[in-house]
Amino acid sequence: MKGECIMRDVNKLKENGVNVDKSLELFGDMEMYDATLIDFLEGVDEKLKNLEHCKENADMVNYAIYVHSLKSDARYLGFEKLQDLAYQQEMKSKANDIMFIYDHYDELMEEAHRVIDLVNDYLGKEKEQVEKPDFIIKDKAILVVDDSDMISRFIKKVFNNDYEVYTASDGAEAIKFLEENRDNTKIKAALIDLNMPNVNGFELLDYFIKNQLFIKIPVSIITGVDDKETIEKAFQYGIVDLLTKPFNERDIKRIVEKTINYNI
Image (cartoon, rainbow, N blue to C red; front, top):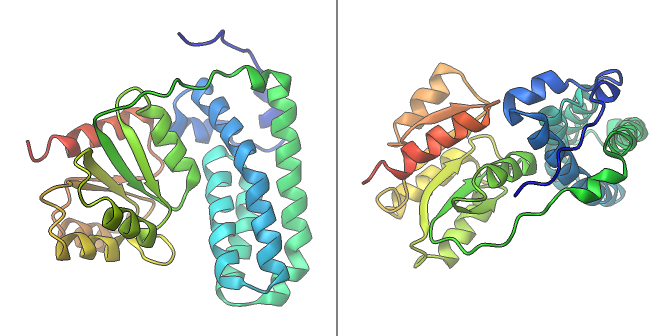
């Protein structure tokens, strides 16, 4: 049974520059959006600490990965200014422009903490009242490979009552997981992003071909890239379907069921 519906003033977010309406194209309703805001608060402090550590050590490779993740969270939750600042930092860190990172780091942190304070104010003490789902052992699973924690958590919420959801933040992590779980017969489908650090989606698809995994695990693509050439290249791998971001709960349910039933 779901907990009692909590009424919050969404205008508090909108009046402070949060594009809630755009976010609802993904999350569908305010209940899912609010729950994801709580997930954001639970993970954002660790991301900011990682950014600080990478900056102090001039580790621009990992800095780019962490700031990309922050950018993705901001994008999905409608924090447009934070998204823009994180995007600038991502591009400059990939270019190894350390001076830009140092010069504009405080600006990024100030906006991140403004957003955190705003979300805390919006949720209030009531955020502790949100029910956590009961742990249930499930006999079927899906693998989600996406560098956005927000997307992975969203998919977990959507399928909480139906499937166990394994997640990997990039292709390298997915390959490691698959190597260690060769005998796992629970995985009925995989959802793979294309644009990821370290090992990207196409490289992961190559791994699937080399190891004949498409026979065991049908694959669909979830991606923010929608150009014709990329889409055509993806379908050459024998994927089931492709879903472009942002998507909603209905979209993700449709593609997962289509993917799972592909080899039946």
